[in-house]
Length: 122
Length: 108
Image 1 (cartoon, each protein chain N blue to C red):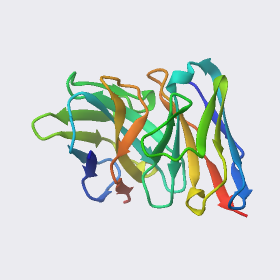
Image 2: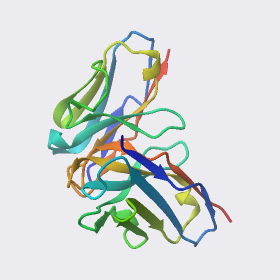
Image 3: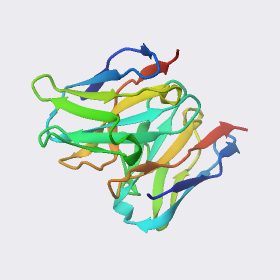
Image 4: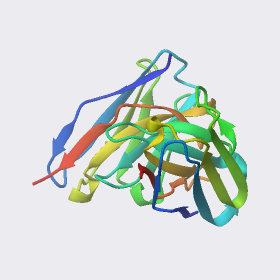
């Protein structure tokens, strides 16, 4: 069965960057979108952006334009989310999530990673 | 950007009762692009419904979704103890993907 396994928790200083990985196993990697969704402590879900690995084109929510890079490596079936210029408000759990259907960037998410806690603190 | 407003914020019910959760959109969009998720503390969200009314794999038939245009509903007929959680709606009709703020279903 399909599993998404993310890298471990991070503690970062304001102004620095963080890169989180998401390795997909047990299914096809290239044809399904991978999105990144974050959740601040006690808050709701926020879509950040996504990619379909076979197309290698990323799409970002407007508020993250210029501060976020999402990439995918088909050779390792892994997706990456790198966020720059970190501030305290970026403290959150970051999830990767896979689209339900092939070759659809905007899709419901049927598989999720376990989440990666990123803490931004001086 | 389509804003999704979920109501109520909290729903206090007893096991066995029916839960009705609302998700209202700031503008109309195709029901093909509306999903519902369940999230329990410390866990990732779980997909329940996609395309407004299609149950995801392995989701019990006590969960049902309906709606169109700007008004969407998630019904849980006969709450089980494991159903007490937070529920989110999600629209993916455009590049401006958004989630609702969530409804917490708690034990009365």
